[in-house]
Length: 179
Image (cartoon, rainbow, N blue to C red; front, side, top):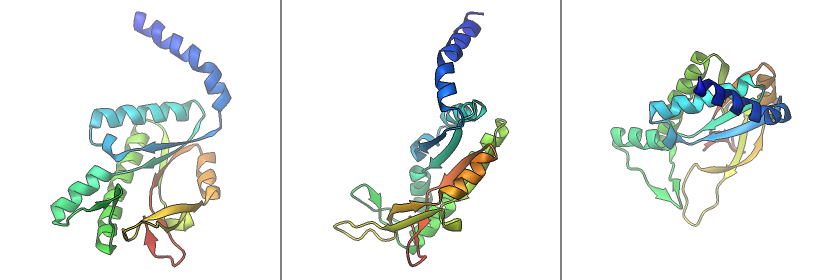
């Protein structure tokens, strides 16, 4: 009984914030390092579903660094980082996208299983994320900075009361894929 009272008190305390942010768009960066532990992942996704049920329009942008590194090790490809960023050639980019697609599908599936509606979007599709090549002292390959985001596409999905799960890839001017 005490637990139920405590939960009710938390919800009552949260009510002004729920009202304030109802129908507002929130963007959550979900680090890949937090996805490896199933209990933590499920807890985070439960919180995101709760926000959706409270009327917040949620965009979840996920990473996948540890999974990508594991995948590269398994394929025999060496991982190299410069200034905290993965050096990315065409082959690496393919592995990165494949692994991020697996994670995106998993997140969408688990959000749907928790009772919300979710859709996965790849940032490189439909000009969702436009990027420009990242300038660094050492060339790190196909890595970029976000230049523009197609918010119309995101808003269309949010209006359908979906949690939008974004795979963080994009395209540059030449339509060559840049991450």
